[in-house]
Length: 216
Image (tube, rainbow, N blue to C red; front, side, top):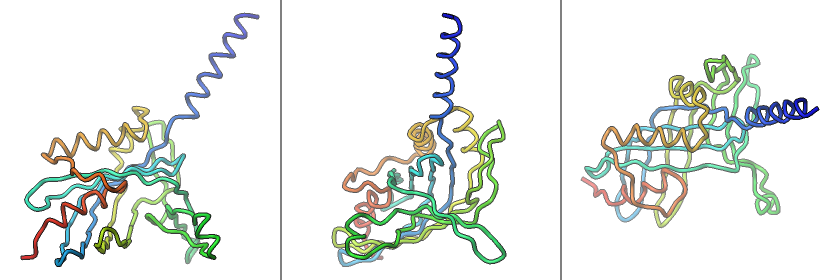
């Protein structure tokens, strides 16, 4: 009986460990941002890495660029997101990573959602165990915001990073651990973290560095 109970306990623990393992999807690409304010306009072309937790829809983002002769990077977290699927022409599937309307929005009759990124779905392999999900192979993003007397607009395109995805999932990494690996990569290229901490988004943290750039 004791052996049976011990075996049951071990199996339960293994199942719990398996169920909490993240399924991560990594992307790499570029993002172009325009900063308008403070009597000047600046355009910055970033390289980007984003990592999506397929289980929770949480996203870690990392942007890096040379700004004002400084090699800078910044990270951010996008949470309270979910996945929305729609069908287009010829039954083509599309998926958006979006943020549901808040209670305040709904109270004021606003029921739309802000889209973080979107793309056409394809079969993506996540690990060497051939775990396959239907998820965008390419993500596109556009957005605009007004903050601290500056207007910021951006657009970007990220492609599925199979190597980073496989490495992260084969190692059983959490979302934070996968971001740490991405940070180590950009640091190896000579980039330093931007000092601004006023925003939770990577783009927002780099805004102050871009604002220091003067028009030619």
